[in-house]
Length: 113
Picture 1 (cartoon, one colour):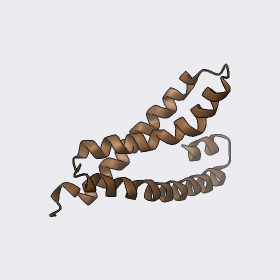
Picture 2 (tube, one colour):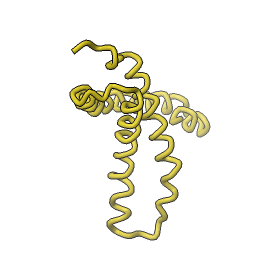
Picture 3 (cartoon, one colour):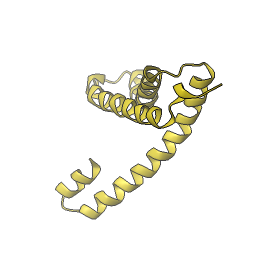
Picture 4 (cartoon, helix red, strand yellow):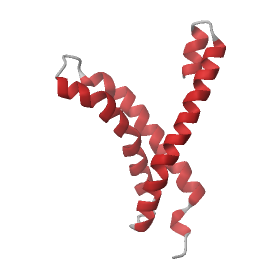
């Protein structure tokens, strides 16, 4: 999406480098957050795809709530938080997709204990 915005503004190279930087940060954040979640879920024997989808969706939307909505609620600004609903919906969807792909690759439900 960053790429398309930059192309629309006339600078495709800026969009290309921005997308690469966002991808690197996203992969690192997914590993830092996702591996502990996976370890906790397997320790609790919650190996269903639905557990992973729920955990992925929650872990993706939590940063939006903490970083953006938290300060707005504390300062009680007049900016409505309803403007965050589309962002949160995209984050929930992305987290669910990433968790589903991880579950399909790892298949924790097939592990022998």
